[in-house]
View 1 (tube, rainbow, N blue to C red):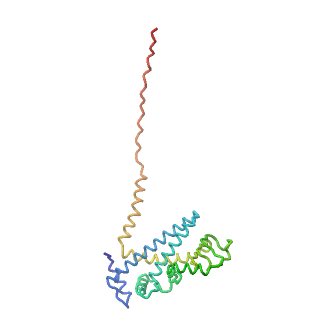
View 2 (spheres, helix red, strand yellow; view 1 turned 180 degrees about the horizontal axis):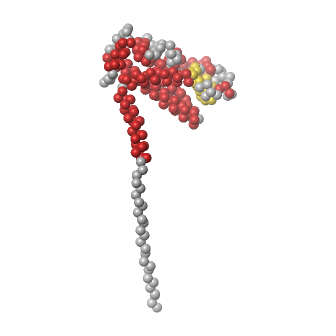
View 3 (spheres, rainbow, N blue to C red; view 1 turned 180 degrees about the vertical axis):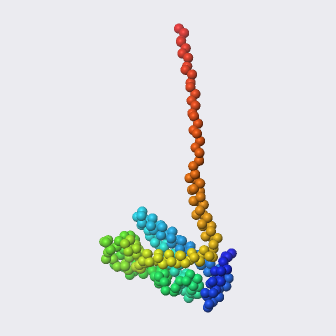
Length: 245
């Protein structure tokens, strides 16, 4: 059962003059806010993986992280700026709660349609790039590489470490610009989430302080016990017995 603070519900009702939000509507909004926060956290974790993979020069990790970042971005984008007619009221209500405008970097056709008909999109790219110079799974500075003349539309997957541009199936995404927009959305989502689910944030803070307390107590010096003196038993010298002739 979802529970919400009354003052938040009242503020939403006051802002929404065209349509009253019922308690059920607030529950739905709460579910979406919670999932938006999850997606933001997943993206944050993926950015950590990306940085670690770049340091270790692990190409699989780099593209794994980039794919996760883009999938999470697609989820957030479609939740808040869905192109579907049936979802527009929901998206508009959430944007109103988060005070996000209609025109926004994440409201982008390339992001919104990123996973639509993925197999068909892949087939189309393969078809149009036939007999062309293509670039596949490249990480580095394209401008200074031997692939500098490749056309963007003929890049299957690449991450330009200089421009921070990720290209997939001929479509480029400015990663820094995306992460800046995502950070803004994440901040707005967290501000609402903490008011809707204060207990979760309280528990998270307690979990952070517990390890610190354990570390502090572990550092306390305990009096050392005096080492017990080792006692050695001296063997009595064996008596020499003369052999009788």
